Amino acid sequence: MAVPDDVRRVPRPVNTIVENNGRIGPNQYPVRERGSIKYIPGGNPQPRNGKVVGHIVNGVYVPLRPLVSESEPDMLSYGASAFVKSVSSDLLSELLQVYNPKDAYKIMAIASLRVIKPQISARRMSSQYGRCFISRFYPGIGLSENSVGEFLQDLGKDGARRRSFYQRRVASVAADHHVAVDGTLKQDSSIVNDLSDFSFKAKVKGHREVSVLYAYDIEDMEPICAQVFPGNTIDAVSYKAFIRDNDIRKGIIIADKGFPPSQIRSELEQRPDLHFLTPLKRNDSRIENNRLLSYDGVLPEVGDNVLYSKREIKRGMFLYAFKSAAKAALEERSYLERRTEKEDFDSSAYKQKRKGFGLIGFESDQDLDPRTAYLCYDDRWMLELVFNRYKNDECLDRTHVQGDFSLIGSEFVNFISTVITCRLLGKARDSKLLKHLTYGELMDDLNSAWRKVDGPQEPASDDDCWIHTNLCVFEELEALGLSKPAPKPEPKKRGRPRKNHVNAIERLL
Image 1: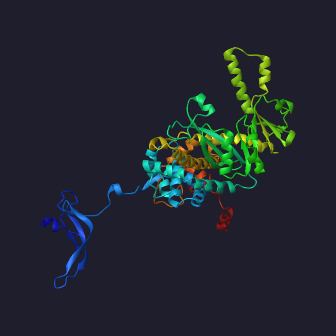
Image 2: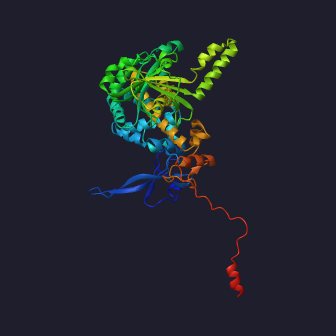
C-alpha cells in the first residue's frame, strides 16, 4: 500500500524506509532498517528490509519503545524480603542438594511469601511476588493460581526427595544439641483427602483435623523435620512411623499427658540415644511420694523465676518438677475469680489446689540437666505459636486441589516457612527490637521499606535508592544488618574557641 508523500518526507534515520501496513492507528506507518541486499542472477540487486525501529506518528518520527505492559517495575518492597533472605540462604543450599534448581526456587519463593504475608491465597501469590524483592532473589518463577496448586500436588507426591531432605537435616544436628519430637493438630475440613479426620479433641470441637509431627533443635529453637498424619491416628503409630521415616536416632520424644512410652519401646531399644520426656498429671501420686514439691533451687537464665526439683526412681527413671512463679500467679488469680463468681470458695480445697498452681512434672529415662528438661517443654510453646501462623492454609481452598498430595506438599512448604520464622524471631530478639515492637509490627514496618531495583546490592541508609522510607524503619533495618548506617556528623563544639596564649605572646615579642 502506498505511503503518502507527507509521511515519506518526515525526517527519519538514514538507511530506513517507511511502509504502510494499512491498519489505522499509531503504528500504521512503521519505519524499517535497510537490512541487506539480495543479488538476483541476471537482474538488479534487490534490497531486504530489516526490523522496525520506529513509526511516523502525527507527522513526527517516534523511535520504537516497549509497551508499558512489557516494562519491569523500577521499585519494589525491600525490607521484609531482605529480612527473610538474610536467614534462609542455607535452606536454599539444602534444597538444591535434593531438588531441581527451578523447584528449589519455587519452594523458597512460596515459603518466603507465606512468611511475609501469612494466610496468603494462591490467587494473590503472583501479585505479591511481583511487588517485592522475592521476585529478584528467586527470579523466573511462575506463581499463577493454577501453577501453585499443581506444584504443591507434585511436591506432595515426591516422598523420596522429602525424606532425603529431612534426613540430611537430622544428620547435621550438632552433637551436643538436644532434639525434641512433638506434635500439633491442624484444622482441615476437606472432604476429598484421607488425612482429614476427627481426632479425639476434634470430636469435641466439631471439626476435622490433620496431625503434624515435628522434630526440633532445642538449642537452635527451630524445626528439623516434619510429617503429616491423619487426625485420628493413634500417637504411638504416628511416632513410630515418624522416627523410622526420618531416621531419628537421637533426641527426646515429648508426648501428651498419658502417652505410655512402652508403646514405642522397640524404637527406644534400637536407638540407645533416643529418649522420652512424658508430662505427669498434677494428681500423679509419684509427685507427693518422691517429694517433688520440695524444690532444689531456681533455674538459671530462664527469666520466669522457675523452681525445680529432680529425683531418680526405680529402673533408672527420673522425675522432674517445675513451678513457674508467673504461671502460678495467673492460675491462682483465675481460680479465685471463678470461686468469687460462683461463691463456692473453700479454704481446704484452696490450700490443696494451690500446691499445683504453675506446676509441671515429667518422667524421663534420661538423666537431664533440669534446665534442659524445662526448655524441652517451654520452648515447644513458642514453636506452637509459629506453627499457628500457617495453620489456616488458604492456598488449598483457592486451587480446588485439596487431595492428600496437595496437603502434604503444602505442609512441606509450611515447614520451610516455620524454620524461617523461628530464625527471624531469634534475629529480631537478638537485635533488641522486640522489646518495643511485636513481631507483626516489625514485619509491617519492613514491608513499607521500598527500594529501587537498580540500587547497590549492599544498601546504605543514606543512598538515593529508597522510596519514602521512614526514619524509624531505617533504624530497624540497621539494627538487623539490612542497611549500612549513614555516617553521623561530628558533634559541634560548644562555647568559644580557646585562645592560643603562646602565639599571642610571640606576636607581642
